[in-house]
Image (cartoon, rainbow, N blue to C red; front, side):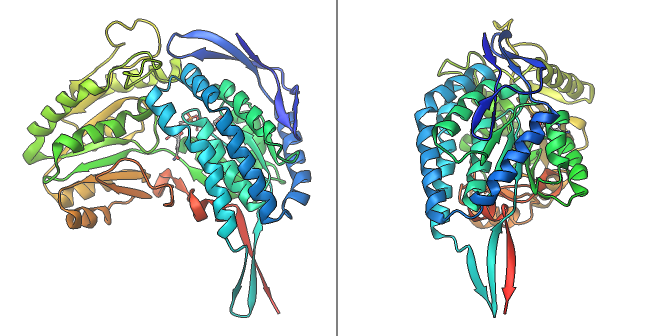
Length: 471
Ligand code: NAD
C-alpha cells in the first residue's frame, strides 16, 4: 500500500492541512493500492501565496535562466521515465504501447519550450511602440486523469518559458503518478514557489484556485461541464483561460479511401488510451455505398484490439480508470441498444476470461443516426459508432452537427478532395490520413471543446500579455 501524505509547497514537501484520505486502486485488479491525503482550501490558498511570492523574482528571470531550468526539468523527467511509466500502467491501466509512445512527450515538452524561449522575441517594435510580452501572473493548472503527466509537463513548461509561476491541481485519481512527477520537479532545482503541486478535490482545491483573486490564469484540461463551472468562477476576476475540454471527433472515410489502412487507423484513434482520449475519433462516418466493406474491414481489424493486462505488450486495450467510469460506459452500451443501434462488436459486460478489473469490451455500434445520444455525448470509453452518409456534403454536415469541435480525421485517396472536406469541418485540428497531430501545430478546440490553444508559440503566448509602451 502506497501512502501519499505530502503536497509540494514553496519548494518543500509538506504535510497538508487537509485530512481527507482518498483511496487509490489498480483498475486492472480492482485492488486498493494506496491512499492519498488530500489538500484542502487552506493548502490551496498557501500554494497561491507561494506562487505569488515567487512570481516577483521569477517573472524577471532572463531567457538563459529559464532555459537552464527547462533543461534540468527535461533531464529529471527523463531520469524518472521508467518509474512514471510503471505508475501509469499500475494506477491508470495504460497499455505499454501508450506509455512507451506518449510518456516521452513529457520531457519533450520542456525541450520544446527551451527551444522556443531561445528564439522568441519577448520585446518587439510595432510602429513607434515597444511591445513587451509580460508573464501573466500566477497560473492555476488543473488536469484530468487520462494523461496527467504529459498534460502537467506541457502546461508547466509553457508557464516557465513565459516567466509565470504555477499551482498545479492534478486529478485525485493520479496521485501515485503525481508523486513521482513531483519528485522529478523537486530534483530539477526549480526556484522555490515556481511550481506548487496540491492534489485535492476539484470542488475544494479547484474551486479556490479558479476564484482566487491572486490567480491570473486558469489552464484546465477536463470535461466540458467542469470547464463551464470554471468559466463562471473565473468571471468575477476576469482570469485568462485556456480550456481544453471534451470531444466527439468524427473520422470521415470518404468513398475513395483505402479501407485496408483507414479502418485500422480509425479504430486505433477511437480505442486510443483505452478509449479515454479527448481527441479520439469516436464517430466513424462511412459512405453508404461502401458500408458493407467498412463493416467487414472493422471485423477483421478488431483482432488488434485485444483487451487485457496492460503489462502484456500484445494488449491493445486496458481497463477504464475507475468503477464509476466502468458503470458509465456500460450504461452507454445499454443505451445504444435501447436507442435501436446494432452491435457490430462488443457489448455489455466484461470480456470473456476477465472477471476482475474495469475492462470493457471494445464496442462498435452501427445503424446509428447522429441524433442518438451515443453519437452526441462523450462516452470516454472504448465505444464507437458508425454513421452512414450519402455524399461529401452530408459527411461534412454530420461531422459538424455536434456541440464539440476538438479533432477530426479525413481519409481519402485524393489529397485535394480531402483538403476541401477538411477545410469545412469545424474542429481545432483536422488530420488527413493520420491520427496524431503535429506537435508544432496549435492544439485546442472550437465550440464546446474549449477556448485557446496549446503547443509551440500558441501555448507560450497563452501565458503572456502584451504591454504597449509608446513614447
Ligand atoms: P473532470 O472535468 O471531471 O476533471 C478534470 C479536473 O478538474 C480534475 O483534476 C478534477 O478534480 C477537476 N475539477 C473537478 N471539478 C472541479 C471544479 N468545480 N473546479 C475546478 N476543478 C474541478 O475530467 P476527468 O473525468 O478527470 O477527465 C476526462 C475529461 O477530460 C473528458 O471530458 C475529456 O474529454 C477531457 N479531456 C480533454 C482534453 C483536451 O485536451 N481537450 C484532454 C484530456 C481530457
